Structure formats: C-alpha cells, structure tokens
Amino acid sequence: MLSFEPNPPLQDIIRGGIAQNPLGNVTIAPAGLGRRDSTVDFYPGENCHSRVGRSYLVIVERYRDPIRLQMRHSDSFWTLQGWVRCRFLKIDVQGFEAFVLKGLQNRIQRDELIILRSF
Image (cartoon, helix red, strand yellow):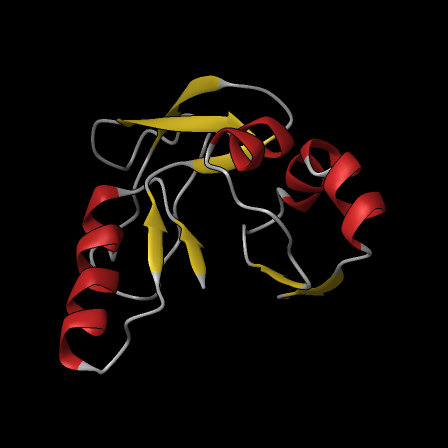
C-alpha cells in the first residue's frame, strides 16, 4: 500500500498508525501527486494536526503561515520509484482530483485502474 502525503504533521500521524498496527506493507511517499513537479504553499486550517479539518492551497488570511509542500508529476514519480503496477487507487484530495488524474493519465490507461474518489 502506498500513501501519498505531502503534509509532514499528517505523515507523522500515518507513521503512528503504522507503528500501532501490524502493517508491514505500507510505504509513505512524502509528496503530493499532480500534473507536474512543483512546490506549493499550503495553508493548514485550525485542525491541521488532526485527521479532519480544512486546509488550503490558496491564501486564506485567517490561517497561519504556509508550509511548503512538494508536488510530483504522478506518472513520472511513480516510474522513478520503480513501482510496477497499480490495480486500485483511492483519491482524497479535497477538490484537486483533476490535477492528480491528469498526472496519472498514462498509468490509468496502462494499468486499467479502479479509482475510488472521496467526496
């Protein structure tokens, strides 16, 4: 199982869950997936260290200073890591699904992915 998570506090939460459970098959990729390689300003909401809460990739004055997050072109990053095939993909990116899917266009066609999108 691969978990793509660009936000360091949420990476720590995922690592904690892995440590508390017998999960030997989880890899955390410390990047977000998108249509190109880039670095984006991420504005965490009030509950950014919990499993819920709103966060933004645009300036929202009432929230704290941005965290710089790495975004990777989905297909290129996948190939660079040496991951061979994917059968199932769950996407939960709060409205940025189109960017992830655009970057995964070749992988989707090649692997005939089953995709679950969170609402």
